[in-house]
Image (cartoon, rainbow, N blue to C red; front, side):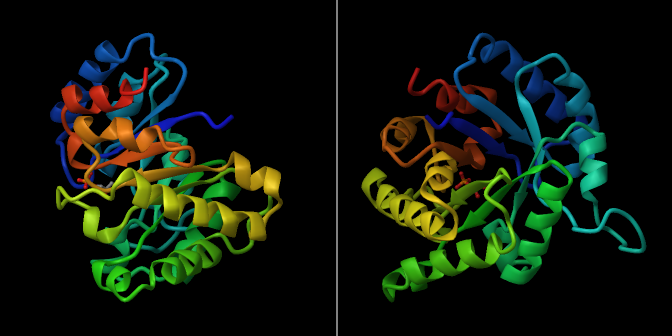
Length: 249
Ligand code: 13P
C-alpha cells in the first residue's frame, strides 16, 4: 500500500515570522493525523526556523530546489548537504516554474535527482505538459520523456516521488478532473514499470498538483493511482492546507 503524501509548495511566499505562524497553526490543526505523510516546502530563508519549529512533530520539511554539487563556487546556489543540515528530508525538483521561467533542462534536473538520492533526500520530480502540448495530443510523449530523462541512472532501491502537474492547471484555478489525472498517472506508472520492475513501480507515489483545493481534493485523492497532492496556493493558509490533508480521513 502506498502511503498518502500531502505536500505544500509555498513557492516564493512567507517571511520568517509568517512561516513560523503558519507552521504553528498547522501543527495544532494536524495533531493526531498519522496515517499519511504531511510535508511543507518553505522558501530557503525559512527552512532553518521552520525546521526548528517542527522538531518533535510528524510534519516533514522539504526544499523547493537545490544544486547538485556539495559546495564550492556556485554563487546563489544551495547544496543537498545544506538542506540536510537544516532538517529537510525531501526536495522538489524540476517544478514547471523552474523549467519554464528558469530554463531548467531534463539533463540538469536529472543531475539534481541523482545528487538528492545520493544525499538521502527524497526527490519529488515534477513533470507535466503545457496546454499547447495537451492540445496537440503530446501529453504522453512529454510526460514519458520527463520521467525517463529525469530518473536516468536511478536504481530500484532509490526512493523518489513523482508529481504530475499539468502546466495549464498550475495557479489557474483550473484543475484536471480526477479522471484526466488518473489516466496520466496510470500511464506514468506504466513507464515506471518499464524502467524498473513492477514491484518498484507499484510502490512509487505519484502526486497530482495544479489548483488542488479543499473542494476538489477528495475526488482526486480517491483515484487509485493518485497517491497525494502537491499544493501551491492553498498551502499558504493553515485552514485550506489542513482541510486538504484531512480530506479522505
Ligand atoms: P497551485 O496549487 O497554486 O495551482 O500550484 C500548484 C503547484 O505548482 C504546486 O507545486
